[in-house]
Image (cartoon, rainbow, N blue to C red; front, side):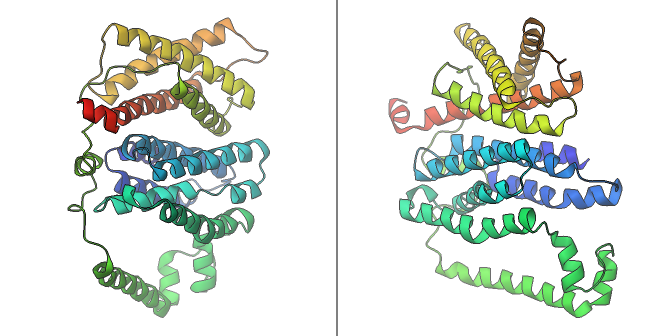
Length: 366
């Protein structure tokens, strides 16, 4: 159930960026405890599983920035932070060296949260370059580096730390026992949380006037920014251009990370990149043909279903025509990887079309 939630919840990031990614982060934070409580046993596989699903929801968040962040410094900074982390995770999966995740911290996630948090009621895209870089640097140095050190270098667990150090009970104790043993500590934590909430409420008076009424909807925010809503009907726009190269790079790294999570799918980075490039090239040619025939999509689900079948057939054909020394991955794992690839490609193509329509020159033409 928790795995299904981690796959489904991120799908709402494009429409409701802030609440959806916060929900994804909560699921990311509790799933290990859920696994420990339900299945128990050896959880050594969790690190690879967790990093793969982290990359999944962060990839959808990055695609959301393609559609919703325009062409300014915020988008450029977010793109750099995203690919920097993605490369780091791929290196970690190749070597198993935890220090790599400290050197390549996940700054993109909190940077996305910060920009989307501002965008609830203000226009973040008029913030100066200095302040945008400052926000990213602050998150990198003072939030993510300590967090990555705690998790990957010191290898400490926050839940165990709270129980053993703060409440003074064994790590395997229940939270009920921990609170019962130190009720004053629990009360102090509650009061601290309430105090922070009151401080945040009081601090609102120092904020600048809102640019619009608070909203979590990306479409409503786009209207306030003077951008058109996303089109109801999308014509396939995949081309062999810079976007094609980005999709190959993005999906090669993602599929490589996911391949480390699934049994029987361990390929080297070059094999994965070649396979992904061939599938995306073939599906781009099919999309181009559909566009020439004026085929259009009314929903993401319809486009995903079609492209999933097309990409699965292409992938199987490539495996038959270009057999390697080893057999291909088991069919369920292969279809799962094709599903992830197809989903990200569909979302990316739709996001780039929305981005094109929202550029100033296109709005002027309209």
